[in-house]
Length: 118
Image 1 (cartoon, helix red, strand yellow):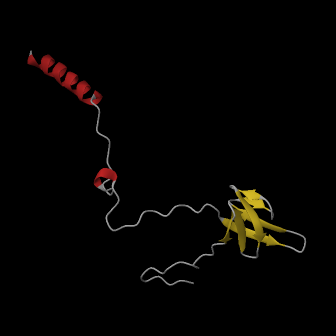
Image 2 (cartoon, helix red, strand yellow):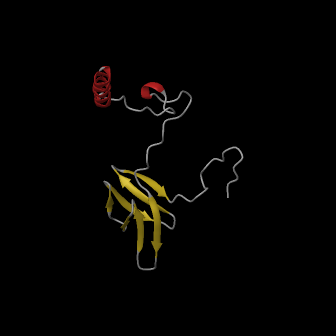
Image 3 (cartoon, helix red, strand yellow):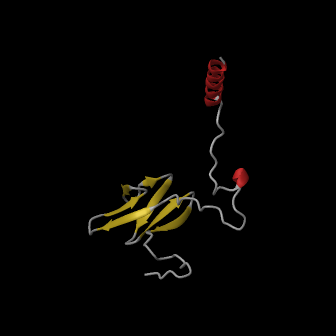
């Protein structure tokens, strides 16, 4: 006699608990409040210009900047390419010039304790 009532009550409770909204899972390695870990530096911003290749021949010079080929005098991201050298490009923007060099693995990095740089 009580058996059908218990089965009905268990079914209602089971249906109700499955529709209840579950809290979102939290990454246990992330600090509370989304704040940065004290004593760590913020992530560096991505460089605006990335020089990945330079092709120099007697008749022309081509630089691959931000994944696209450019010649001297071309504009890239609002800056004019003034000169293309063997491993760098000079760009001018707003009257100021700056040099964008190719990044070579291991050059310009500081070694981490225990790491040997090439």
